[in-house]
Figure 1 (tube, rainbow, N blue to C red):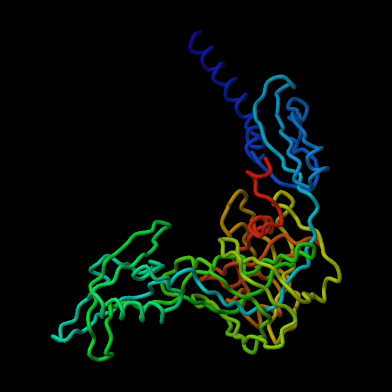
Figure 2 (cartoon, rainbow, N blue to C red):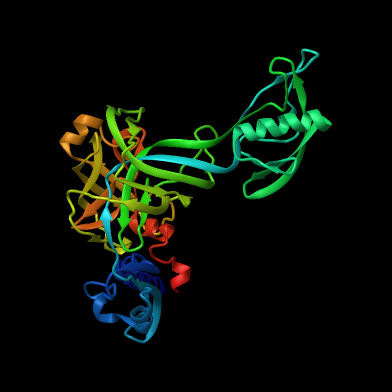
Length: 417
């Protein structure tokens, strides 16, 4: 009899678990924090919508109305309207309208300090090769800020300061930065008969340049966003800290088609008579940002269009806008295949190129296409950022809201809460 009761009790527990499992899955699918353009509360479906109620606890409507900042609503999900089982927070975003980009841009960036991109032996008077900088602990990726308390901005500044230090005292005091930490290194200089200069065995660089795509222009503040991903040094793969930089129009004159294992590339040149230009104030994980001057025109959009927040983007068809020849923006079909919520990098969506014309010309996503705006249902949802190396028809996209936060068009989560 006891065994039978145990079996019956176990069966009841199993049935109960199976019955509430869909509700658990639905609750788990509701994010703890989401941003959207309206006050609609996420609801459960089916039978569970009758027993679990979503109740807004706090609504800061006055804040949004008076300041234009996001309205924050705290929502509690309660079983039978009595027992709290999950809390979430909804940020109702103010209306933001942007002019979609798609223009090809030339990017020129100057770093703060001078980055170490390589090391080399210095052959002294005795004919023996030595590595002074390496022996002193200088590493590739370090950023040189000062030499003998003299600020350096270019590779020539570094070379001249080291030569002067060698002639004066036989060593150089180098202030460098690594992973946000600043340290002082003393490096013995070596006289190089071949160049008739004192050297320490470093290759350095302070500039980067290339071609990308403009994502958006915000006409009220004149702020822009482009690329959708950070600019890293080509040799060290380290983020370049911006001293200053500029963006202007560029013209595409060739396409290197992508294939499996070999991403393609746009080949372009900077346009001297550009219709727009901007500075670079920020280089971040979501792209480059600054202030734009001149005319930013997209023939497909006569006026600024609204943005889609993360919670409003859906899997399905979309459009991207980019330049394949000259300065002409073209429209192409893509599919948003996957949405990865709550990621803070530039890989928030998986997109699949489906447009036959684009596949024929480029093979899919290629270098230089980064920043191409993604439009879904008449709203800008993000930008193309990366290509899958082993499948050029697929790549990643970044949410537009992440770019807007970095650009300072909207405030971040912590600022609005």
